[in-house]
Every structure is written in structure tokens, then in C-alpha cells.
Length: 557
Image 1 (tube, rainbow, N blue to C red):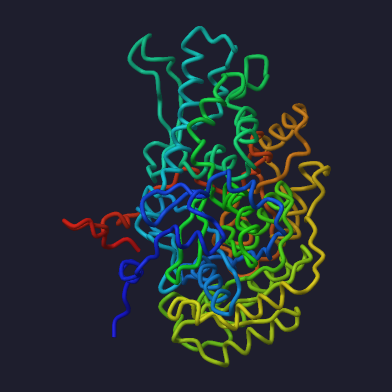
Image 2 (image 1 turned 135 degrees about the horizontal axis):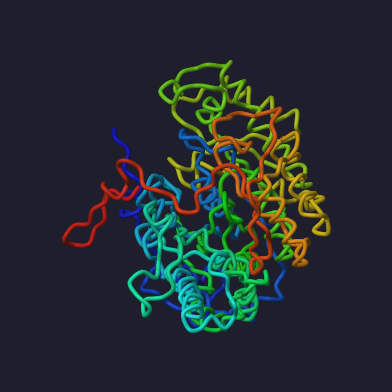
């Protein structure tokens, strides 16, 4: 019998009014702002009512290095929250908002899968409550004010060759990576080279997710460096007097969004920075609300433990003062076989040697989490082709690291398929842990970069291009050495070479340049070839999406 598609499952779900979902968290109708029947934002007034409550348990979900075989991190996050509710725990899940670029590109929707989804799935994947549009508008307002300042006599002495702010849009469009603006005549602006990034790569998005409220948001926005003067001084959004208007555009976007899972467990979906470019976590505000409202709060970080999880722990937790209680690392036997060298068409075949060769990738991610002083639980996202022998091999390998391995069948069975995993996570949360950051912020940027590259990626050393060395010198001259480090690296490998699968060894990481995100509070070392404006594939997902006369969507994941 053919399985229903994710969107068909979502459309068959009878959703509860969001007011009722809010009540499960102890929120009243006055505490939320309705966006129709099934979506809402949580008011900041609600924070005053709950801010003195004790925090619940913070559970981070991460994964092994992603492969085309699929790992199921978001699905596991949703399923785990549902399973925790099944065993009588007051739970909540927090996810990032999907970007339209991947939705219409290769990845498709990003709301979980099977019977572990957040709903209304179509709304969440497309437009939602307008947060991404607000980020796009705020960012492009800044870009417009910057070019207008240059046009109107250039009072800030901006060197147009050193404008570092690009424009953004929430779509994959490679033809906009490099453009020339200001053509036409004197009244049409000053001609210069420009380009577009995707909205989720915007520093404004990172700031939205790292801000604790509107005042903090404004302060961070004011620090965004947009260009440099002819005498090498930074020009900020504050210098352009842009931050107040930008914050106004973001005043609603900064409030967390409340929806529900298929099993009516409350879900907070807010913010969505890329994890291979930015810090890849949902917002601090959503996380802080969730910890006050639930006893077990599940959240995820983008891609694997070398990217999203490291940034969650070193950046987000440090800025917000968070202390996780447990970490779930998601893997699948199919994905581990790919790391062992198996072709995609052979993943359903039993091959213990290939699996053995792929397990070191999982072991490295487990070691990474343990290095932060946190208890880890491995969740194996099960497929029909998996065998007991294969699972036993993984269990035995992880046992040597003191980490339990549980099957997760939440895609097929929802919360019921994750009960054993939920029980293991509750047990992990009950243990004392020694959580600590990987590096001291007072270390030099090179020391911080080296620490991440050698301890988390497994690199031998870090090489720097001449441009990267100049960038670091400028950061030093500006007094920004104590900023945190947000590594930009391929998600396809522990190394900076996407072709190296499994657990690479004997490699160096090369830093090509270092960008400064002063508002977000970190520097971004760029390694390998990182696209801040992705392109579309030969046949984009958009070509399979449609809507009928009654507004019913098809083909969306």
C-alpha cells in the first residue's frame, strides 16, 4: 500500500484552534495575537507573567553529517516532543522557519515529515506570519538608505568600492549574485557593483534570532557595518540612522510564532538563519518562552553537530545564558552506509563492512557533544530495510562511548514511535552535567578558529589566505577580537571539502576570508566555497507544486 505524502497527512489532520493549544502551555487568549484560527504570535506582555518561573529541561536535537539518504532531524524533533507528551510530560518543540529558497529549490518543505509534522504545513512553509518578509524589508531599507546617502552628497565619506552590505531576497536566484546598480543617469543613483544574498543569510536574520527584545534588537541593528570610509573607518546602520525604522519593520517579527504538531503538541517556530553560514538556530525569545512554558523543551540546530550544534552551544547558549540538559544525535543506517562509501541505490542491501566504515562519522559527532560536557542519546531513524544486526553494531560502537542508542519510528507512528527515545531523553535530563563552552571568548580569533577546526572538525591545522589575514588584522584594529566565531563551512563533510565523507583525517581547513557581523556579535570565517545566494536545480521543487480551485495545495514536500 502506498504511503500518503507528507502534505496529504498534514491536510488530513484535524487541527485544534490555536487558542486551545496555547491553553496547554498555560497561556490565555489575551497572551496571544491571532493570525487566523491556527497560528498566533505570543505577546511580549505574556513574558512578564512567566519570566520568574523555573526553566524546564532544554533538549537539543542535532545529527550526523547530512547525506542524500536523509537523517530526519526535524521529524525526530517533532516526534520526540510528541512522544514526551505521550508519556505524560508537558512538552513543546521549537523549530526554525523554512526559507522559500529551499522550499522551491531542492529541499522542499521543512516542517517535519510523516506523522511527526507541524501544521498548518502549507502556511509554515510559505509566508507564515510574514517574519521573513519583514527581515527582507528591514535589510533592503538599510541598503536603500546606504545608496541614498552616497547619492545625496555622500556626507559619511563612504568608499563605494568598500560597501559590504548586499541586498537580500528569500528565493534562490543565482543570476542576482553579482549585479550592477545605479545605471541610467545622475538621478538613478551612483553606479557600482552589488549583489544579492538569500534572506536567511542576512545579518538582520541573525540579529532577530539573537535579540532578547526590541531594545536589544535596535542596539544590535545599529552596529551592523555596511561599508568603510575612504580613511578606513566603519560605517554602521546607526550612522545612517536606519536602526529605528528597521526595528519598526521587525516589531511583530520579533515575537515568537505558536502553532501545533499533528498530535496537537505546542510548537514555537521562529527565525531561520542558515547553519552553514550563520548560527542556524531558532530565536532566543522562542527558546526562553518555551523553557518557561514547558517542562521538556525540544529544539534543533541546523545540519550536524559540527555546525548547528557547535554554534547553538558556543554562540546561542553563551549569549542567552542557556544550559542544555541533553542532546539527541539523529542518524540512520542508510546515511551511515553512504558515509561508508555505499551508492544511494545500494542502501537497502545488508553490508556490514560499509556500515562499519560509516559509523566513525557518528562517533565523531558523539565525541563532539561529549566534549561540551553534555549527555548524548543517539536516535536511529528507522527504515524498513534496517536489520537487527546493523542496529546492534551501532549500539555496540556507541556503548564504548557511554551513549545509549534508541530506535525512532516517529515518521510512521508519530509520538508512539518515539516513546523509548523519550524515556531515554528524560533519563539523560535527570543526570547532572558539566556543560561548558568550547573556547574562551577572550582568546584571539585565530585561537578560537583553530580550536573549532581541530577539536570539532578533526583538522590538523588551519591555513589562512592573504585576504583572511588582512581581514583578521582589521578586526583586531577595530577592537573586535573578543567577538564569537561563527564558522561558514560546507555541511556535507566534517572537513571543508564536501567530497570527504565519513570521518576525514589528515586535512587542514583553509579560511579564505573573515567577515564581521558586529550586530550579531560574531565574526564569520569563510571556508571552502560557501554560497550565500543558492541557485535552483535543473528541475526545481516549484515545478511540482500546484493549488486547486479550492486553494488545496499539492506537491509541497
